[in-house]
Length: 389
Image (cartoon, rainbow, N blue to C red; front, top):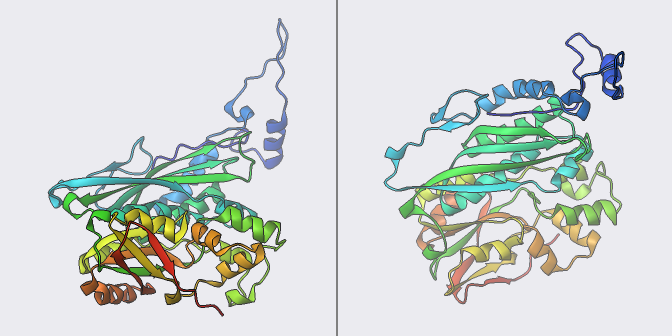
């Protein structure tokens, strides 16, 4: 892991106390000329950046990162580049797949609640579940954390979530970068992104060219909002709706607050999808992110078929009802923004539908047959109405 980290605090020596640090940080710099003028050396810390806290953050993260290692990982944490030995003997024609993503404005909720150990899971999910959609096994991930001020414990929390997500996905956290941007981000602000790399046998790449009339659409339940539509959520709930993050919402159950619901981590399906490929004739996967069900399912349809999806086969989680009611949002807008309770679709052959459902259920995934592939023009037909109440 190659976290090159910068932080805003004064370099005042290892024995300095907090008051020394504050005094050194606030000491003004003045230029003077001529003999007898007082000179002061300008440091990187004077510009709001220092290296030491980043090194501390890396130390706090090392044990978590090592838990994500795979046999192909070479070297230890701290090199200039992460090294990964690809087992080319395992494939006839290996194809590398890559994906880059972030978490979006869900980070605002994390920062407001001062809870930072879940958004890393969201980050990994957004990347690896795009990789597995083409049938690729996620191999490794590289992260990027930009902070207004690098606080080691906070960075360690974020990194711990990323590490946890990589373990769930079965990929290595191979490297990354933590950078401080004083004057660009506020001290309490940060943003995250990641790039993942996977591999798939060329002859086994999944996609629209495999989808046929008569195939079955299998839905996998989401854990909630996942990481999409949070600008709209914040607008209708926290803005116009004037709700508080510590408000307990009865419909969520178990004395769960609004903030806790909004920070529910995105479900990572990568390992479940890879297992499904082993067990069944999978044609394609559709990762439901921004654009909702219609906007993502259409990406895996050839021009001669439609996907017929019956809303009556499932009930969205209460958070979707709350957002729609508070914002008075039209059904079409909800459906084009949110996953509405489905995080991943699998298109499988009709004869393997029962096997697919059994496989997913055995792995703890709530799954059901949500529709069929019929003759058409490459469109998604949403029919029926969701169960309410």
